[in-house]
Image 1 (cartoon, rainbow, N blue to C red):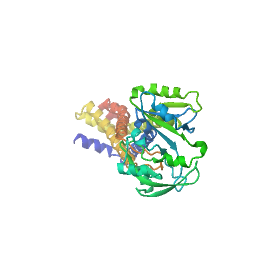
Image 2 (image 1 turned 30 degrees about the vertical axis):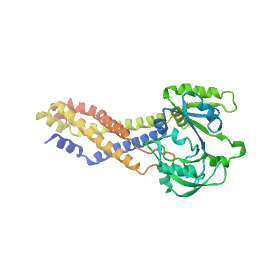
Image 3 (image 1 turned 60 degrees about the vertical axis):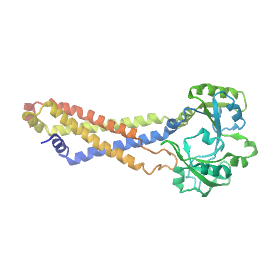
Image 4 (image 1 turned 180 degrees about the horizontal axis):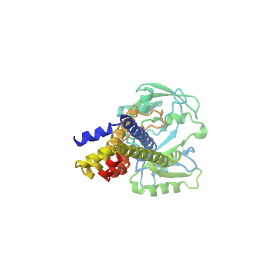
Length: 380
């Protein structure tokens, strides 16, 4: 009998136990896949943050505005190349649950500072000429069935009333992790309907710099420029700004690592127990194998191989299920716009499953290897 035939014959000896063990691996790796997706969703901003961009907000809080006049003063600082500004809008479409990020943008500089967001030039030019125009990300457009040419109403929450927009273009990210859920409209359109006390104010600035090596110096220079003013600033790199935003939700990384560790430790106990029982049931057969000439090393490899095959098949099934369940995109309606299981997570999941299989099967395999033929036959 060939090695593979012998191994699979042993695995299928107890079909119920085999199915339950495979299910344990599948469920554990399915959970691992979802944890990897959640981690990726929260760290999305860190992974795609521009190394050559700074974010300037009000020192008190991001919800406090900054004067529009700050833009020219920031650009005079050596190393600052381009600058754009944004305002958070926070409206709703049809129902309160229809959340997606909406920004009033600086039409002139948006594409220069954020070149990773791509759309046809003719769509952008139509948007520039249309005071009520809007550009929407591909994910949000698909979610609501919007297409170029549609006219949609959005109900303001901070600025009351219904705002009408024309969908002039749909943008796509040039990288997998780029956010395609945003909705942009012209800052001038927002400014027209702003109360007088808020006119000439913007939410925050994004500054494109010549070299990432100068980020600390330029950030410090910007904050010094506006120190002791009514609108003091806090400037940081885009990556640090995104990291600070994620921290508001708690230590996501620690939570995911803790849950993942508990899951794999439990799976390790299940695997070890399964293989120990399997070896104990086959004590006589293993003794016969040794009696007819098979080496201790062969027995060790046989038991380890069974454990590794179990972990590989069960892990692959779990990760495949996780991948399939992400094919339809974000099921959270905008809370986790980056809902994707990357290949690196799949690879780490398979390696982790194999490691659990190897460690869980190691002690039973060593016990089978050290088994003496006389002692084994005496037990039988």
